[in-house]
Image (cartoon, rainbow over all chains, first blue to last red; front, side, top):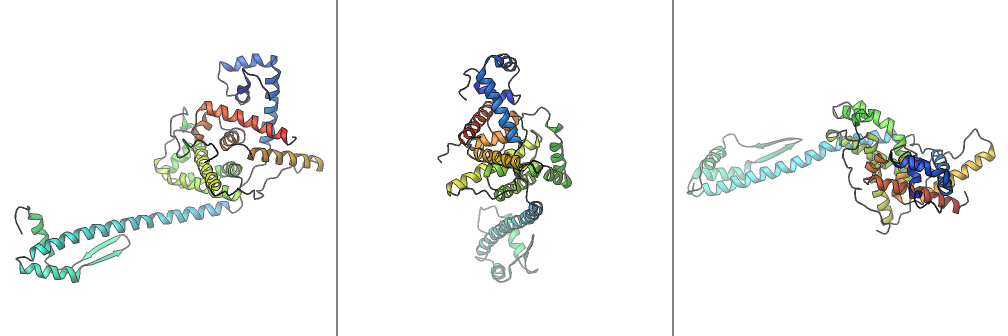
Length: 161
Length: 205
C-alpha cells in the first residue's frame, strides 16, 4: 500500500466514520481522483469484513460456575483478612496498654505495698481472649488495676507517684 | 523490555470525563444499581459482557484458558470497585480498559518468563456449516491466515483494532480504554490495518 501522502493515514478513520467534520467532505472530494486511496479503502473494507466474520471465541461451559465460586471465595476471604488485620491491631493495642500498666506498676511498687499485689496479678492473671472479632481482657474483679489506672490518669508527671 | 510498549496509562483506568451522558448507558445504570446494593444488576452485567470480554481477551493473550482467568479477574475487580464506581464513561469502555491492562500485564509476565502463549484450540468455528465443502475449506484458510496475521500485530495495535472492529467501540472509547489520545488511536488502527494487509499479502491471502 504505497499510499497517498496527503490522505493515506486518514483512510482507516474515514472507513470507521471517525474523520472530523471538516476532513470528511475533503476526503470525499479527494477520493474519486486518488487511486491509492481508493485501493486502500477497498482493501481495508475487505479486511474489516473478514475480521468481523472471524468466529467468536466463546467462554467454556464451566466458566460461569467457576466465576461464582471464585467470587464466593473472594467474598469469604475479605472478613478473614479484615479479622486478621483487626486481631493484630488489637493485640498491639493491648500489648501497648499492658506495657504502660507494667511501667506504672513498677513505679507504684516503689512505695505502695498494694501495687506489689498488682504486679503479681499482672503477671499471673492477665489473659487475653481472642474469639473472632471479640477481644476481652480478663481480670480479677478485685484487682487493683483500676486504682492504678486512676493514679496514672491523675498523674501530671511533675512528681513520682 | 524489548517490545517498545509504552506503559503509561496501563496501570489504572482514567476516570476522566469523555462521555456526554454516561448514565444514558444502560450498563452504567446497572452498575449504579449494583453500587446501591442490587446484586442482580451485577449478575446481568456479568451475563451480558462475558462473551465479548472472553473473545477480546482470548485474541489478546492467545490462550483461552488464560483469557478466562483474566475475564474472571476483570469481573472480580468490577465487583470490588462497586462502592467507588462513578458513571463517567460507558461501562464497556471501563471494562475493556481493565481487561486491556490485565492482558498487557499477562503478556508482559509471559514474555519475561519467555513463555510463548499456546493456542489451545479455542472453540473457533472457521467455516460456515451451511457452505459447501470447498467454501468451508476456503473460509477456514482465510480465518486461520487472518488469526495468524492478527497475532503478529503489536499488542496495542491489536487491541485497538479488535475493540473497533469486533467490539464496536468508537475511537474516543478506545482512547479511554487504552489510556491514549484519540490521535494515537487513529494511528494505531491505521497501522494495524496496514500491518495486517501486509502480513496477509505475504502469506498469499
